Structures are given as structure tokens and as C-alpha cells.
Length: 399
Image (tube, rainbow, N blue to C red; front, top):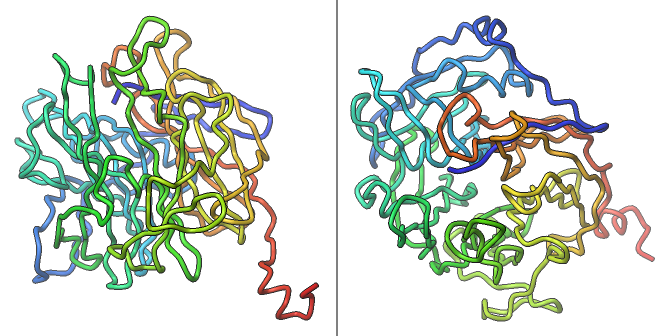
């Protein structure tokens, strides 16, 4: 929860939204009604906001009207579904209750239907609970943070999640991810139909980022150990034994619960202990990387060094396992000059092959949830389309 940002760079234009512009959005709290009668646990649809369009300036204002009472959240992730909707997840949503008090909900979802976004939780308006794993959650002590998601061959969307325990004296003082779990969602009803351990249920967190091609679903891992580990200036922060390491496993495309194999640098093994980094960790102590396949390229975005740095790297590769080469460096500027920070960049789906959009989490160093605690969204030029070897060979260029 503790982090956030704003960007300025020659290659990026981050468009701010004034309070007048936010008011002009005229959000409509009309729930997008999912299909009824499906099995599973139905979500509590806390509220809906409808934007004028889904450009970055409007996405920046997603929480301006506090849909469902949500003041802000972080670790934005979005997955396109087969029916055209987009499932979003967020960590640690700050929620305003009807009586004006606030509470923290460790995870929420948002279902995007066109330009309307419906907030998904459990519980009620007066007692909001996490959307995923609510019965297993003890606030501030034991909870689940959503990771990336993938559509399975069963037609459901499967959200990976990190099971978190607070081992320190207060919230976010010594946080340990212990296992990787998966919540399975029916895309028509929005119901949670299953919550279970991932096939690799360890604390490496395979499912941190998920990408796919026609044959394989790739599960990238990053340890997400941020709070209470190694000293950095005056705080105990990231576990530097793993925080800059990104490895990858794979399963047949859509077979989310198949046994993964792991990239060893020269091939694939069933032994995760043999996995090697696919993003060069040199010169960075934290690398919470998100990877997507776009224009037949594998494109990675990283807010380097998490809360502490001011650089965003965009890298590309011709294979899911790399090597990744940097194609752009962006400068991240916090929303306020002294008390604010930025962290976690992730790709947001776009239908335009010529551009890509990423979200960037923002916060205050003191963790007080204000309008700062909302992601910003940025458009960048996409790498040009590149034919695969098989495509070139099909055209007669096999040499």
C-alpha cells in the first residue's frame, strides 16, 4: 500500500485531470448486471462509474467520484476477457464507509464493460470485505494480494494471488508472502467459483505476471518481499536476495493448473530450483516487472527499484525468456515533490497495435490515503510488429 507517482518525459505525456474535468465525468452508479443463477460466490457490486471514454486521462479519474466508496488503491492489473469485458484487480483499497469513516480492503476487483467500471467486493456497503479469499482474511494480519490473471481453456479467468502474513508489530512492518493461490471467476456471472492453491503454490509467486502466445501460458515470478527485510537508508525494505530476480515457468496455453516447467537458461525443467533470471538484474535492487506479448514481441515494463527509484524501463525480446533489451527509459515524477512516491508499473490492454498503455501506482510516504493514492496511466509507442520464424518460413524465407 505504501507508494505512488506521476511521470514526465520526452516520450510520454501524462495528462492530468482537473477537479472540474472529474466532475464533468458525471459517473452513473448503475450496476452492470451480470448473468444470474451461476454457481459460486456472487460479488457485492459496491458501485459503478461510467467514464466518457477509456483514454488515459479518463482512467486517471477512475476513482475521482469514489465509486463504491473507493478513495484509492494500488497495484493495478487488467485482463481482457473473451466476452470483451476487462477484469481489473487492485491491492489495499481505501474505502469510505457510509458514515464517513474509512476502512482498508485488502483486494478488490473492477469489471469493465465498455467504459463502465463496477467495483467488486464481498460484504456490504457498511462492512466491505475483500473480493477474493474473504473468509481466509484477518485484516492486517493474514490476507491475499492479487497478482496477474489469465483466461483458462475452461473459459474462466483465473486470478493468481499471494497469501500474505504480517510478522511484525504493525501493518507493513515485516510482510511475508507464504503461498501462491488462484481464484477462478465465471466471466458471465462474475461469481468466484473456486479458490485453491496454485500448482506451484510456493512463495516464489509464479503468476506475478502472466503472458501467452498460441502454445504456452508463461508464468513470471517475482518474490514481492518489500517490507521489513534488508536496510535501505533509514528503513528496512526489500529482500535483496530475491527482489531483483524475475524467473519464468510455462504451461500449455490455458492449462492454468498444469505442472509448469521452468526456464533454466538452456531449456525447460520441472525443477523450479533451476530457474534463472530472464530480466538482467544488474544495477537494480527491485524489479517488479510486468510482461505482455504485443505485436509478436515480448514487452516488459518495470518501475526500477520500486518506491525508491525514478526510472521506468521498457524492454523487449523476441522470446518469452529473453534476452530483453531496453528500448525506452522514462522518468517518474511523484505527484508531490517531497512526500510522495511511485512504484509498480503494469500493462493495461489496448486494441491499438501502435501504442501501449501502462499504469503506475502512486502514494505518499506516510501512507495516508488521499487522492494521491490512485494510479496514473501513460501511453507509449509500441514496438513494431515482427514476424515469427514460423511466419517468415511460411512465406518462403526459412534461411
